[in-house]
Length: 289
Image (cartoon, rainbow, N blue to C red; front, top):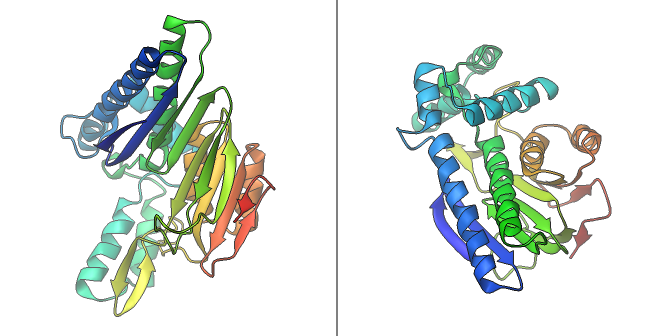
C-alpha cells in the first residue's frame, strides 16, 4: 500500500494487486500522479489552480472543472438545496458568531440562505463532490495502466479522505468508524464488503463551533443556515464515488426517511448514525459489530 499525505488536504492511500509486483507499483504510481494532476485543477489552497481562477474570475475553460461544477449544481437542484456547493457565506456567519460569542440571528441566517438561491462562484466549494470525482478518474487511470501491460487486471482500491473506490477482482471489507469514538483501538461500528463500488462517509461529530458554552455542528443545512442535528454520520455505498460523496453529505441534512428514499433511487445503500448512537440502515449489507 502506498500512502501520500497531505494531498487534496487529506490522506490518500492506494493499493494495487498483481501477479507482477512491478505492474502493481506502476499502477500505484499512475494513480498518485493523476491525483496530483487533478489537485492542481481543483485545489482551493493553490492560487495557481483552475478552481482558484474560477472563484476569482467567475469563469473557467477547464472542461474537467466545468463538468464537476455542472454536476454539483445538478445535485443542488435535485435535493432542493439540501446539497449546496456554495455555502461559504453561511460558514462565515457562524465563524463570526463564534468569535463574537453571539449566536446568529434568524434574520441574518434567512437572508444568507436566500442569497444562496443565486450563488456566487466566488463562494464555490466543490469538496463534497470533487474528492469522489477525482477518485473515480484516478482509478480509471489505474485500469488503463493495468491494461497497457496485460488485458487482464487484478484489483485496485483508492481512498481519499472518507471516499473509497474499489475496482477489479474480489472485494474488500471496510470498517465504519463509530463517530463518537474515532480511536484506532475501538472496533468499528459496522463492516461492509464492497466490490467494484465506491463508499463515502460524512460526519459532523468532530467538527463544531462553540458559542456561549454550547456546541454547534459545522455541517449546515443550506436551506435554513442552521447547523444540522440528529444524524452525526452517514455512510453511502454507490456505483461511483462522486454519487456516494454527494449522498453522504446530503444525508446529514435530510431526515432519515428522505435520505433512504434518495439513496435507494440511486440503487445505493446507506447507514445513518444518530446523535444517540443508534443507526438506521437501508439494507442488510451493513453488519453491526
